[in-house]
Length: 321
Image (cartoon, rainbow, N blue to C red):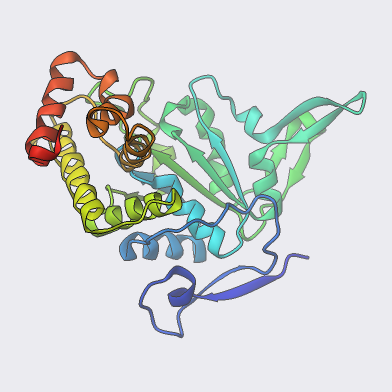
């Protein structure tokens, strides 16, 4: 029997919250499917919505949408890591079939045996199932999840009609760039418009890039982990790197019509990569520029590459050399 545990929200997630507020998770902290706990600064609004869903899904699934690299999956995994909630993760693609999520017969110890897939395991054992990039998957395949989301048993015809009654702690969470509406920009190849009936079963949470203070903390933590002391000079460099990232994002997003001037953006993930490479190439004539090329701009069109480097030169001034 799985033993649950109440976790105080304030101390568990490092936020200001009444001592009476708690979230139920699991006692066992050694389950191999629990994500690794990492330093993380939670956005109160995002955390509130995720915890509300985990506590009371009420027949819904949760869909996190937002720009690439904004931390959609990280948010869920770091919540799960702090309340000992095992997670099954799948990255979707255009050829992924529902049967692969349910399970399949495989050769085990010399004989064919049915091996339950991530969906069946999560439904059976009360785990979080995260379907990343869900809008890359065929809508007709995803329609098979409708009954599961609503709490109906999972019937596995290929395993002799096995029926798995959903565990009360089973939760389904999806991430994607398009909120199921398809890609109107042409930047996310393979994204498909999803079935309206399927999307109607989701709560939607919009995740944007972290604010200035959070990204400062992330980059400072990155450098500290590399053994680089963060002094006033380094703090100034970090601030300027984030300023460059914000300007790139502004030009990527564009105006109200959604048409941006850039076709690539600098996610928090890329910002961290730029930081790593800046230290790795610290002996280069211009370590900042050399690292920026390898972190981002060598995959940009020449005109856009020059535009991004011009932004960096303007922000860094004499330090860009």
